[in-house]
Amino acid sequence: MPAPHQQPVLRAVEEWSARLAKLQAQAGERTAKAVEASWKQGSAKAKELTVQRVPTPQDWMEYSVDLAQRWLIFLDILRKRGNQYFELEAAGNPPVLVYQYETLIDARTLERPANYALLRIVPPEGMTIDPEKRPFVVVDPRAGHGPGIGGFKEDSEVGEALRAGHSVYFVSFYPDPVPGQTLGDVAAAEELFLKEVAARHPKAGKPVVIVLDNGPIHVSKASLAALAERAHWLTVEWLPKYAPELNDIEIVWGDLKAHHLAHQTFIDADALDQAIHRAVAALNSERNRDLLGDQRISA
Image (cartoon, rainbow, N blue to C red; front, side, top):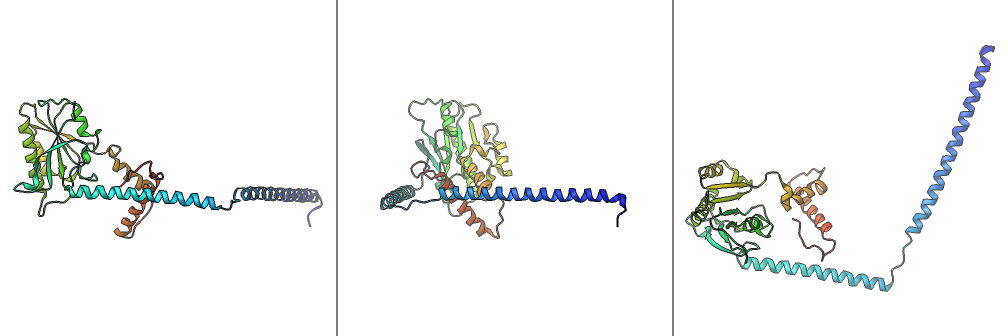
């Protein structure tokens, strides 16, 4: 038993403990009541918001008409794109340049054939070109959707050079390589193209400017050595290495990797391929909610 002088202290501790327990019980009870009231209030509002009107025959009619119209628009888009594909294929898959052009050399007819061609861009009416200015040769980037992607719009390397008064030549490619074609054949054809352009502009100082991307064939040791040997008459303008914002397809790939393919692992190449297709479909769905608003395909 506690000593007599300790009993008042123990009683005080017991009283404070009892009061504290009572306060905790009251606080818990109030909290429980508040949560219950909030839950009931939220449930009532949820029920009000989720009350659905039973569709009427008129609703079903309007929905059916809308669905039919959207399907007709979608099928018409497929028809137009299919016709465009067959027209381009029947025409031999010509470059999709926005400018008129003249084919100067078709490398498929050379002794060492390759699926490339040298084109002279015909300046638009009213545009003045100075033949003594250094000519520009734009090499079509193979990373594009098809031949001519480097000049398929006026705001491009081709358009900028034309507006500055330069003669512009375009090195395009055909979709299918010549059987047995090698990188050496392509290099030989491009060398012939540059010589042809230089011969057409003998009065231009350091006559030829070539615009290249940083594709492996352009930055290989052999290509860099060949360019260095011709530095007395050839100026190379390299496109930026790390400027994806200048290339639409790079922006799309960045979006896919950041928002549709991030934080995933794939067991094999087939799984990755399927995931990419699903991601592209999802991205196109996001960008084409209005079928008439934007017909652009992302990738």
